[in-house]
Amino acid sequence: MRKQDMNRDWTATAGTLSRALPYLQRYDGATVVIKLGGHAMGSDEAMEEFARDVVLLRQVGVNPVVVHGGGPMINAMLDRLAITSEFVNGKRVTDAATMEVVEMVLSGVVNKRIVQAINAQGGRAVGLSGKDANLITCDPADPALGLVGEPNEIDTTVLGALFENDMIPVIAPLGSGRAGETFNINGDTAAGAVAGALKADRLLLLTDVSGVKGADGAVLTELTAQKIRDLTEDCTIAGGMIPKTETALDAMNRGVRAVVILDGRAPNAVLLELFTEHGAGTLIRP
Picture (tube, one colour):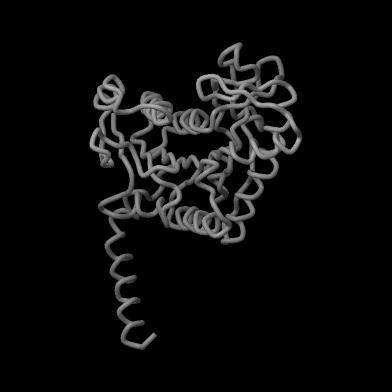
């Protein structure tokens, strides 16, 4: 690359940083909960880039919390162990044998992969599940689903302690029952419950689509709660997008300022959403 081309690139980078200043100031001290979906984790390169973005958030004064899923990894392990898994209305039926695999994969392989990636970029990540320090207490979601839980109580004490020490919580979506059971929690649901308890400034739902789409197939850049209800009623919002928008509405009812549904596979998606004027994905406000 010629020297003048390099200078042009660095000038563009400096200009981008300068334009980001108002947004950096806007989110200084804010809490941002990021739901990282199993499909959005992608390759090692994608994980490295995501980890770098999370470390940058912490470096500029944001308190990031990562809540992750791991459905594809759970499916792969169940297949290897020849354990049949069933779904009811898109949710995994979790019996005792399946629960062992779910906990092993989420709290073990997936959680520690994310923690390691963040620490490799200079962050200080700590892996947790909702069982640790009574973070998430659950009630059974539906008897037909077995050990699937609905968050009922969130104790954020441990998260506050980690924030005070500049650490980044990485949470596996598991919870404790009142009788000592272990519950599997939908990742979006867990992220929404944690974000609500923290009164987070933003809940970012990283998925494998570019956002909520209108009837014409174009991404809707901003929605209100009422517009979501209207689009759901006329079936524009359908399928797998329904639980995500329901999570968004529930999180805002719990005190989250806004929710964004965005494509976690896009390069630097989190930074684009928070620190640029145009953002990324669909912004949902009360």
